[in-house]
Length: 217
Ligand code: G3P
Image (cartoon, rainbow, N blue to C red; front, side, top):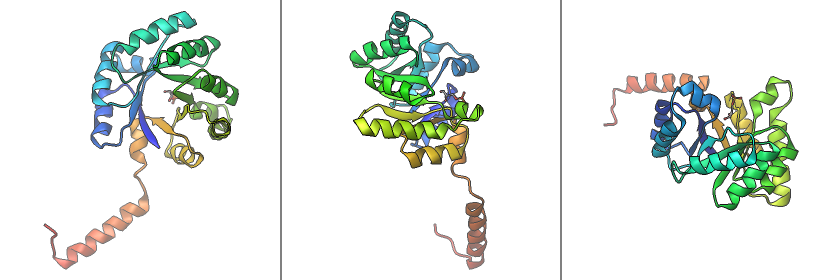
């Protein structure tokens, strides 16, 4: 399973990259707005931190506009993935941009049918939003499972990028189903290490070790 950081905060991305666990980054217009940075400037900085795919999202609503913006964003670095929304125009733009050999992430996916369209349009990644489905009392994980089944039925190579991840349980559940990638805020990824029995066990080991009076180094 690949880990992408869902953020445009440079410090957070650097911290995760230093662990060697970071496989890529996803951004969106809301995350860029939150960073307060210029999209091209901050995206270029992110592309220097990781060699993995860095999603930069188009904001045009027509296919021509998305294609033009996508080509422009792709000039930032070789590892740019152009992110387009799951609309009819987004699907048309995906087909053109993927046909040019560019990585495309089709975002705002909320149904299996949308995921089929993205795969047929040559998307590198499909981004189903788990948390936002949970927010309206639907099960986001059912969508991940449906897409996994459908893609496997037809051998679609589009990678399932589980997005809108809000908790560590989302990560384990997406892994169980076989999502290829999760994108999550770095704080959620860091929480994966937490377990009270680990803390308790470590305290006991250290207390016992102290009694031995030994040192390893
Ligand atoms: O990158 C898109 C996605 O991960 C957004 O998450 O928490 O705003 O629904 P959220």
